[in-house]
Image (cartoon, rainbow, N blue to C red; front, side, top):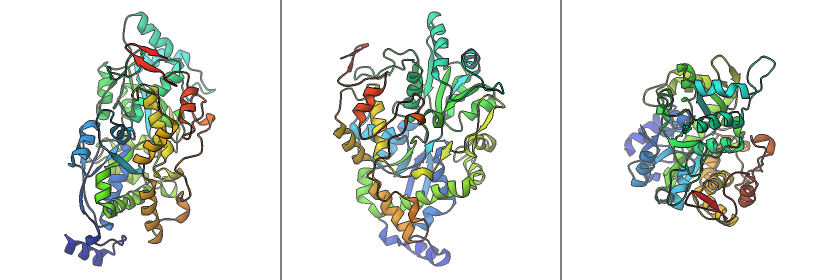
Length: 453
């Protein structure tokens, strides 16, 4: 292996300065789920960025998020494209116990909430229209509330899908429902359905199966990443009603997750991986997304996302189609490098933890200091900046593109950038929880079927 790397270095002038003997491990297997936002992994592989760092990487699609996480914990996978909530939940022992870290945030935005055609037809009378007759966006869940009430009156449960209990999609769907006055339900240590006191019953469906589950009538809507919202449009079975960019402008999405032990035992390898992923993210966003169609063709391959290129392009190239024919410009629907998208901010971690607390996955109140400590134990900006510094020194990245002086917390997200008009400041998580009208706050707990306190 080392001889092969040296030969590659001589023949192709490898960009990375690490020689094979500097890497603790050079053959790696990374997992992913078939979603558009796994793109940095595919690009780092296809563009040769992993090879430039002396890394021989195999990418393997996983059946679902649990299998993926178990693979990283068990060592069958060296790292993976993960839900941002997974390293946090594992580290605090929710669902499973394992110290997982992230030195790299994979993207911003990229999700949508879709409802069936039947539900859309019932929502439309409740939605204001523009001068051109098209619905005004963003669409509030208050337009869905009368539909949910009608189903309740008829004795029908209103079912919607999300991809995993600690997924962004679960928290975004809950956020949207609660912002529209609907109760999305609570978790308790005794009842992990997440449906305690719910107006809308949320359950897990793997991303690629969302359209088929919607078409079968098992669920009436879902929150998922691309291309599975656009797939519903192309199939003529559903209508995306809101993107997460409209829900919370430039919200954090997936992360690249590895075990803390892997990072400790393989620091040079970890740095090399992050360097390759940063280069991939830069390529995806450079020159105003000039490479996106090439990325679309890449992702359409069966070994990656495996959806039609036309479907993937519908959201990844700066547009998003809602109702069939209602295609609008959303240039930041997928962001991979702009706005410091790849930097693992503590404030992003804290937001996920607040949502776990809000809905009872964290059953008891925690101090602001606790949120900060957990964030710092999982999100690792120091590893990220070490990799970024190496890229700058090698002439492969620009100094100005990285937040060298950050304390790990973004400026507070202003009210205007969030659908319910409630600002978010990661440095004051408990005050933030208090500001949300629906959800646990203070010392409240879920006992049986009721919120107490």
